[in-house]
Image 1 (cartoon, rainbow, N blue to C red):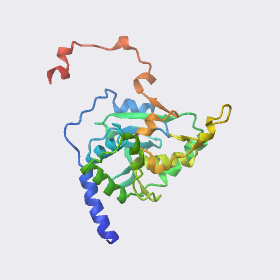
Image 2: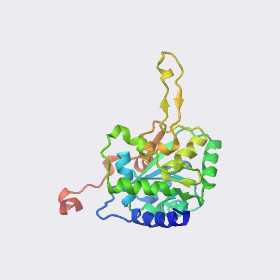
Image 3: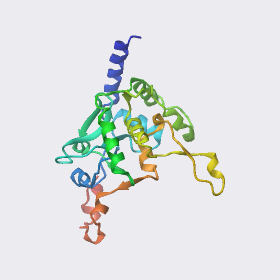
Image 4: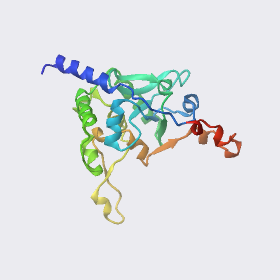
Length: 253
């Protein structure tokens, strides 16, 4: 099959996978403006998507987080400026504003003790990927998992996540960000080597291949801190203005 035909089919499938599904509801009460105020370059923003592709990723990763973006810094309004680096199914690697995900549940995962030099390298390496295309092989794989979810035990699903060709110019969202962090030797979910079982030995870690990472891994990682704007600003539960449940939207449904 020629590349042009494959690309045409891939683009059609990408359009199908990108369609939003009905019934999604945002539960987070924190505004994107409040979220933008706490962002720092190098932060990973996780998105709970509502598209067909989100269904496949959520199944494979057993998580509600189906998309990941890298915050590359801001010189203006951090909520409306295009400062989130992401790999979009149709557009490829691009920059979008946090406001683009205003209607979705979001989570900020921050790499801890990241040096200023490595933070700069992380952002610069990410910007160099702008314009790279989404991996078409990944599109075909995700369609397969969407149409018929294979009955595979959960412990084996990570090996199924190794989607796509693995070529550096063909990016997938979490794969792109994982590769960027690995380029500065920052851990996400490394594998603890058997050598480390010896008492008193310095732990030895091995990298997972970057194609094995999903958005959930940044949430699970012991090296990333979950940042919540309400807690960062000095939360006091005594200041909440409560109403009776009978007046709430949930009670009216």
